[in-house]
Length: 461
Ligand code: NAD
Ligand code: UDX
Image (cartoon, rainbow, N blue to C red):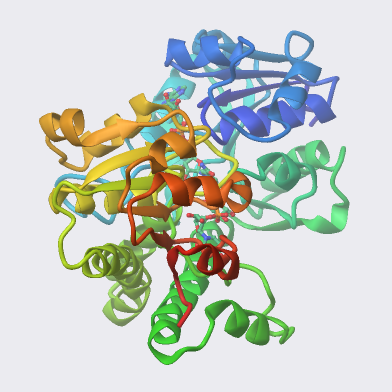
């Protein structure tokens, strides 16, 4: 089975960059990325891509118009594709059975029904979205029950492991590619067809194949293990603050043990992003559904600890500012959930800003990549009164405007530019004592102290 034409449903943070990389590496394959969101497609076809990722512009420019296309003409793209990636959103369900934990699979189901309606001939359907284990069974059932054109299908699971901010490096040189398929001759053939696409630039020994359910489950488990490490080090950050230990020193000491490893041990204001919380909740729901409440409770704690870390940071600010922040101006540096992305989904900054606004603080927010419109949208979505946003939130064009006249400054995203700010200038702009709350532990604390700031960093005694 040779793949000549690929279509991807969903032109988001995963669909766009992933398909751009496949198109760049496989010039003989036509790759069409579809979305019903016209604005998003227009942006992918413009010089101003909807996703900010270092290196993405160059990858898109190398293939767009040649063998990479972005369109809202989804039906045509499905009809002419040999292989269809489904990369639509799978948010946490907000209503009914499993509300707040289960994945909302409405977009997956709609995609499967559309494929069944339009497809002719043989198609390989690839789950790229992160979904609960056994979703391939639902997709197969929908395809079989609704196909009217005599089409045949093989369903594969091929979860995506890229992290935002490093998506291009991750796609170029992944730790592994995981492909799950049916253990039948047709299933093996479909797995091989997909594997041979990745093998254009990824060594074969990095392409792992498994059965469908192992692949689907591995994605949730990978995110749960990664998030668990952050909650583990964040729990220790609290202990460090009360004992005089330094969490970065502890992380280094334990991370040099090759069994632990050095990555994902950076204490922070709490993990954010569209994946970790959603996928752990999904795992919790699966454990509950399969009658494993103890396992569910174990993973739920990773989220509880993360929520505690965010509220602990707000409490630290309020306590330090003499137990009141009413009408005090506080500079917020960074709103994205991590550096090098414009994505704010589940960013710790959203909840920290909301809680400071509940204390009647005034916020001066600066982020190098996140728009004021996105910040306002996020604050509204967590229940902040629009009138409070108008009167108490200022979106600033640079860190110095944000710091002007503030009682405190808090770093919530680890943007590199914050490490080398003109700190004497910032000190001159701030009210005294000039409190700094470094939620990412990235600032030069010895220098700040010497200059006359009153700095606090997560996990530093
Ligand atoms: P996203 O919200 O950025 O993009 C999803 C897109 O799918 C939206 O633009 C939406 O309009 C579109 N869509 C929905 N139904 C469609 C349909 N029937 N046809 C065409 N387009 C349709 O989401 P994302 O961040 O790209 O995530 C997609 C999936 O990948 C999720 O399951 C997520 O968990 C998973 N994932 C995300 C990341 C990440 O870093 N963001 C990493 C790994 C896996
Ligand atoms: C994550 C997974 O890493 C990726 O494999 C998966 O495909 C999607 O979910 P992403 O959420 O994009 O990727 O970024 P990641 O680098 O994992 O960071 C997630 C959050 O954890 C961010 O808020 C980040 O600041 C935080 N984090 C990360 C820490 O607080 N400490 C760390 O040591 C690492």
